[in-house]
Image (cartoon, rainbow, N blue to C red; front, side):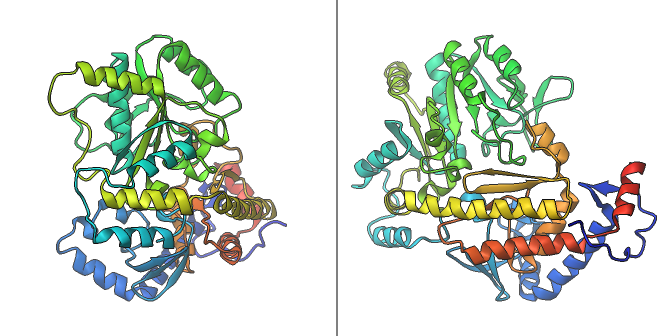
Length: 481
């Protein structure tokens, strides 16, 4: 079943441009309509946005809260389970889930109870709480590495890991994958240019240093480039997402992770796997479900149920290396650790999440819903004859605007259409469904319902049908392009 034709919108007849197989003018018209609809539906949010501009940069407490593509920031009143409620009283089935931070739902009761129980007992002490031994044992059991440390964010954890790797190996350089995402870590803010050179990522603000002096990157899934880089013997660490996620989803090709582990071991390079986004893969993350054997394991966001907390784990060999560094280093601040790290509230949330929320039953339910969502999208793309694809890892799913799934970050970025993404996201938001403000990532949670999944699919189909134009016109546009 192809898209049902309807009369061309005004001004569309002379259009020659397409994006992701759809006419640009039709998208622009729908986006304009949806922006008007947003303003009609959200007068309270608009009023708060106007007030907020008196003191907040761009009218928001953190600048990327402007990145949703709405005319003004949407202001939330509450979040519970997998539902958000805005200040105008509209509710949303939430498939963004704090970009993984609330992957187990907003304010799981076990975590709320743990935090409430700790609040009157102290917020921060710079000393371990009584929960520390149990939390350490839970981390080791869940993720398979014996030694652990706690930070406030995954960015902090990644910085610590790279510092330890350099100190242990005596090497200065680190290797990441082109278009990777590791939070605010400067060492990962490099990009592979068309001429093969490594440079600071475009858009990076206020960075005086040439990051390529101590960081390099190769394309994800490029066996030859990875082997050539590591053969130089100059890299302390490879920092990698097991699946690339922030540039659109890029899955590893068969054998890639096995090669990554073998090559890092052969050339004396430590391997750090950042699972901050891929905890959604399975219980224990992608690392456990696929038998990866990293030297370091990093997780943030959802690891404590959305409470600000991150962890990094490491092998016994790494522990011995760390202790050797500690025994010989000069006195003074190591450059790692922040005052509020591992505070009693964080440990309480971490314990509750690991013991009571992050369970095998929860993951089984989440994956069942994710498979339902994936099957629905596959059917939608086939029914509507759209040249797109669906990628999924565990409970994390994206629709990509190219016929084939990308092999690396550059391919994924090239296939993305900001106009199409903004239009679809706003269409969904205006009808009570929330997806991420970039690349249309969707997550299922233990409290997401089948009805919410079906509603999401129905609205995607409705949005695509709203863009339907005669197939003859599309083919003509393709020919002109």
